[in-house]
Length: 244
Image 1: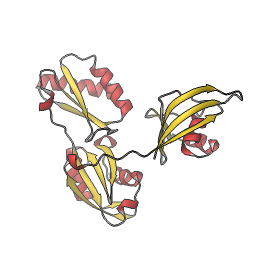
Image 2: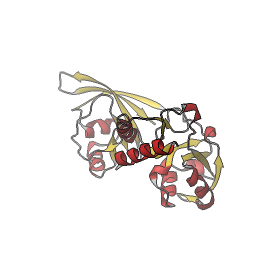
Image 3: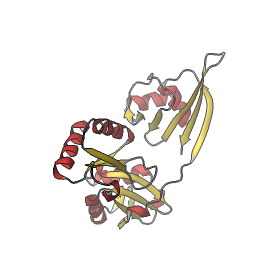
C-alpha cells in the first residue's frame, strides 16, 4: 500500500512538474518509501519534520531538475494551551486529535514546550484543530496556529542501563529497559503494545540485536547500544539507552 502510494506520488510529481508529499511517516515507513524512490528515475526527495531529529516526517518528492531550496516544506503547527495542559501525556494529546477524526499520517511529532503542547500537522489539519479541538483528556484546551519554526525541539533525557539478561529475547530486554516484570512485558507484546524498529512484534521470544529500537506504549523507547557477550553464568551483557 505505502509503496504503491509513493510510486503514484513520484509519477505525479514528474508528470505535473510539481512537488508531491506523503503523509507523516515513522522511520520504518520512510525506509520503505525511500527504497521505492531509489528505483525511480527523474525524481528526488527530501524528508521534512519541522525540526532536526523529528521522528515523524513527510517525504516531499520533486522532479530532479528542481533545486531543493525551491521545494517548500508542506508543514503546519498548532499549540495546545489551557490550565492543566502540561499535566497531559503525549498519548492524551494524540488520542484527542485522532478522536476528532484526524488520520494518523496527518500528525507529526508532538512536543511538550513548557506549559503547552506543540503539534506538527499537515496544513489542512491545522485549521480544523483550531476550530474543532476543545478537549484533550479531561482538560479543556485552546488550540492556536503557530509557525512550524516555532516548534521547540525536545531536549532528550537519556538514561544508560548496563546489566545482563538471561538471553537477548524481546521480553527480557524490554523488561530491563522499562523496569517492569517479564510476565507483564510478554502480555504487552502479545497485545501488540510493543514495537521493534517501529514495527509491531507479537512474539516475546523475538531475537534482539544491537541497534534495535524498542518502544512500548505508554513507556517510551530504548535503543540497544551494545550486546557484550555471554558471562560465565550464561547471561548476556547488554547496554541500553532509555529515552525518558
